[in-house]
Image (cartoon, rainbow, N blue to C red; front, side):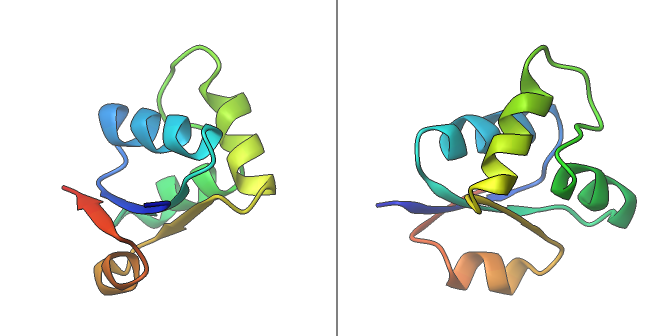
Amino acid sequence: MKRVSVVGLGYVGLTFSACLASKGFEVYGVKVYEKKRRLIAEGRSPIYEDGLDDLLRKAGSNGLLKVTDDFREAIINSEITFP
């Protein structure tokens, strides 16, 4: 299992997603709010957690973290989904 989707990229979901991506998992993160999706896609966290911006930048540049508002896309392209 290497493809995971995480629904909700708040404090827990975003941190979890970034950590999974740092371990080589392909992560589809679902976030409804466009502004926050854009920040995350740029490697900038909308919340503060030490080191999270670095993890997001690495995950984005490696193509391991994809941020979407499309639940269906995320679920179809993953082997397991965390709500």
